[in-house]
Length: 509
Ligand SMILES: Cc1cc2nc3c(=O)[nH]c(=O)nc-3n(C[C@H](O)[C@H](O)[C@H](O)COP(=O)(O)OP(=O)(O)OC[C@H]3O[C@@H](n4cnc5c(N)ncnc54)[C@H](O)[C@@H]3O)c2cc1C
Ligand code: FES
Image (cartoon, rainbow, N blue to C red; front, side, top):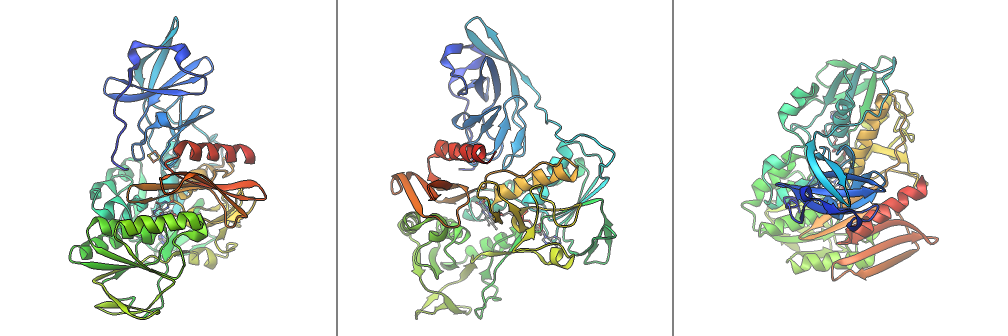
C-alpha cells in the first residue's frame, strides 16, 4: 500500500470542466501537468488541491468531502480544501493548492499556490516560553510539529529515551519488516527537520522524574530541564512473558527501530520463527516474516485471532488468510519455556525455532506520571482538553485516558492516528487554545494485501451486522449496542468507513 502514488490521470483540469458535471459536495480527479489534482465543489465555489495524500500516497479524490475538508480513503487523514493544510494526522505535510476560475459554464484550474497553515491559537500574554515534551513517538512528534506550525516561537525540548528520532512505528511490523520498504522511509522526518524547526530533540535521554511545583523535569543523567508547560507522551512498552528463556538473544519484542533491526538481522539466518500472540502486531509480524520466506508458527491462548476486538467472523477470516499464506497456528496454547533451539508448548510438544517474536500486548509507561502524583486510572487521566490533574501538564497517546464523546466513556487506546491527533490537540492547548479532543478513534492493520480499517470504539457489543462478504474482502462490520453503531470495521470499503466516521462525528457534535 505504502508506495503507490495516485498517477496524474483523468482530465487535464487546465482545459476546464463543465460545471454541471461536478455535483455539489463532490470531487473529481484530474491533473495539472504532472500533478494529480482534485477539483471539489462547495455550492458555487470550486477548490483544487493535490490529489495524493502526503501520508502514504492515498488517492484523495476517492475520499470523502466533509464541509471544507477532504478525508483520505486509506487512513482518514484530513486536508483543508482551501489551504491544503493537513489538519488531522496521519498526514502531517500539506498538499499544494491551485487557483480556480469559472468561465461561462466551465471551471478551469490555474496556478499552483503555496499552501498555508491556519493559525488556530490567539497570541496572548500567557503564552508559554518553554515547552517540554517527554516522548519522541507519535504523540510527541505530532505535538512538536504542530507547535511550530502554529508559529510558536518559544523553546521546544523533546526528550526521548529511544536512540532513534521519531519513526513511523506502524511500518516496523509491516513493509519495513517485510523488506518492502527502505529504511529511509522509517523516520517521520530527517534530522535536518529538528535543526531547522529549532526543536531540541534529545535522544537516549531518559526522564527520571517531574518536579511539579518547581516546573522542571529531572533527567536520569542528573540534569534538569525547566518548563512552562509539559506534555507527557511516554507511550507503551511491550509486555514480556514470565516464561523462562525470554532474555535469550533470539527472543524479541517489537516497539522500536532498534527492535526491528534486531529481528531483521536474525531473520536473515532463520528458517523457522515462532510468534507469540495473535493480535495485530503478532499477526503483522507473522505476515512480514512470511514475506521473507520464513516458516511461521503463531502460538496464542485465544480460540480465534482478534476475536475480542473484531468478532468471530473476522477472526476466522484473519486466521484463514494467514493459513493461506502458510502460517501455522497453535491456538488455545501458550509457551512454557524457550531455549536456544525450541519453544516448548503447554499442550505438549515443542517447535524448533531460530527466531521468536513476542507480541502479547503493551503496557502504558505510567511511572513518571504516577511518581509525579498525577491522577491515574489505568492510564493518565486527562480531561477533554487532554490536560492532566495538574494544570499545565498534558498527556497524549497510549498513556492517556480521555473522556470520549462518542462512546460516552473514558477510554485509552493504542492507535497511531489517535496518538498523533492527541499530540496535535495537546499542542494547541499547550498554547492556551482550549480545544476539545473529539476525534473518532481510528486504526488500521495490514495483513498481506488486506487492509482492515476500524473507526469508533466498541469494547463490547450486542449485535454485529455484516454487510458484504468478508471472505471476498469486501465488507463492512457494524458493532452495535442497543441499536447504536459504536464501531465499524471494513475491508476495501473505504467510503463506508469514512462515512461512518463522519456520522459518528456529527452524532457527538
Ligand atoms: C510495530 C508496531 C506497529 C504498529 N502498527 C499500528 C497500526 O498499524 N495502526 C495503529 O493504529 N497503531 C499501530 N501501532 C500502535 C502505535 O504505534 C502506538 O499507538 C503509538 O506509537 C503511540 O504513540 P505514543 O506517542 O503514545 O507512544 P510511542 O510512539 O511509543 O512514543 C513514546 C516515546 O516516549 C519515550 N519515552 C517513554 N518513557 C520515557 C522516559 N521516561 N524518558 C524519555 N523518553 C521516554 C519513548 O522512547 C518513545 O520515544 C503499532 C505499534 C507498534 C509497536
Ligand atoms: S495514505 Fe492517506 S492517510 Fe494514509
